[in-house]
Length: 248
Ligand SMILES: Nc1ncnc2c1ncn2[C@@H]1O[C@H](COP(=O)(O)OP(=O)(O)OP(=O)(O)O)[C@@H](O)[C@H]1O
Ligand SMILES: [Mg+2]
Image (tube, rainbow, N blue to C red; front, side):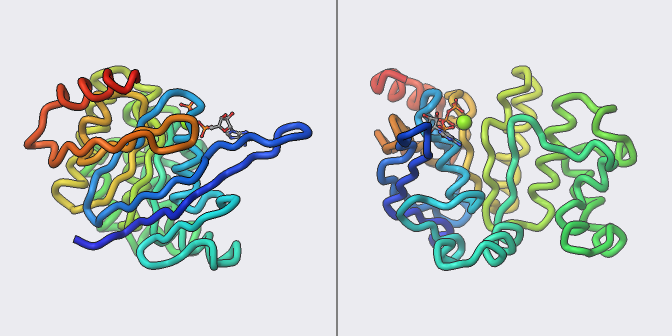
């Protein structure tokens, strides 16, 4: 296994009024290629901040993030954007689809943004539509889809560039239990079958139980790391027991 994502002593302070909020207080971690890790913690503990820094959407106040051998802090903004587009795929709680584009165009968006045509990527995009079970709805607009279907489009879009890492922030937070399970199963399949590296932010132990390893965050610091091993070999009970001990 090789390391694909590293964080070294990440500190993030946000300006707030006259003062500042210290959202992260020195986070270090590393993720192996093909690993599925989860970041858990209560509201305000710094999970989304961590994910934004790990994926290069924002820069730390101090510390370093290295994605697939590239240190984000050494790049200028344009290089960082290009690296982020090439190496990461994001999935958010509220889908973030473009309403004026069809399903297939939303999936192909990373290519369209880079000035490439849908036609040039058609077989690959068709395979993604099939993967998320939306071939029949390829030409619908997002507002004609259910919430679960919209999140499946967002996931296919995140996978489109075959990124080094998928970063997902509460991807099931806006979905019911069954629909949420479909999204988690798709994430799991992409990890298990395609070797996709996944970093999942969640406050739901059921979602975290899909991961190989769970980082527990409290007040901007890593409180614990729970090693579950491959999902096929473990039970959610072990994680839930540990979380109860930690008071989560
Ligand atoms: N842009 C910002 N400006 C100022 N403070 C911020 C900003 N973003 C986050 N914070 C603060 O940083 C801390 C961590 O926020 P963050 O959004 O990372 O938490 P979270 O764990 O994702 O919470 P939730 O589960 O509610 O999404 C909180 O105290 C929050 O108020
Ligand atoms: Mg959050």
